[in-house]
Amino acid sequence: MAHKFCPQCSTPLVLAKIHGRERETCPACGETVFHKPSPVVLAVIEHAEQLVLIRRNLDPLAGYWAPPGGYVELGESLEDAVVREAREETGLEVAVDGLIGVYSQTGARAVILAFRAHSVAGEPVAGDDAGEIALIAPGQLPMQPAPEGAPLLDRWFYDVIHEVTAPWKWGRQTLLRK
Ligand SMILES: [Zn+2]
Image 1 (cartoon, rainbow, N blue to C red):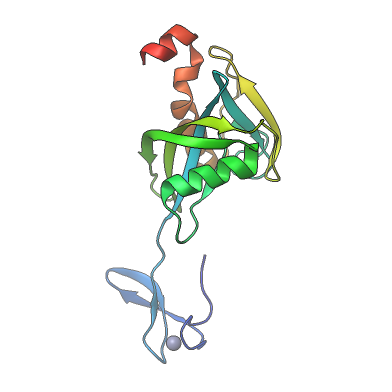
Image 2 (image 1 turned 180 degrees about the vertical axis):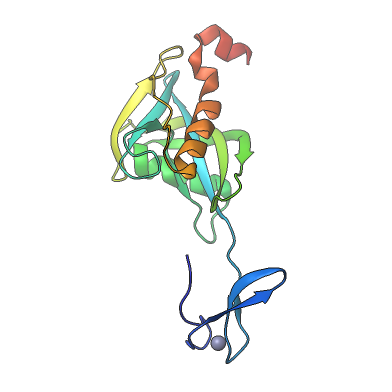
């Protein structure tokens, strides 16, 4: 997201080559805006031996089933963010079991960190950001067409969802052995 005005002194920013690339910089006070990727957590939640998925209301991948997730807020640990997003989007209180993987993509503004978690309280209810919620038994993952021709972010996110939910493609025995 480009800035128009200096966050320090509100002077209109200009573009200048700084540390090897064009950056927004302030001609008055010298402040330079460095854009950095934002961490996003995904919560791959098990509830009653089923996978919790929500149907996304918003892009990327609006209309697709995905684990709940969202941006990490300032001051939160990654695990805090997983617990908060799970509560907001599914109504479940979860405990975080561990990191599945870290995903980045050239050109993307987010870095995705996917965590395994399991419910410890609550009943699944679709939250504000989720259109619907579903409990998926092992081997019952929804078939979702790849977003051919969609923006890079959608295709990348599709691949990440595919990868982090892959253990649920097969039956329970396979899942337990994994
Ligand atoms: Zn300034």
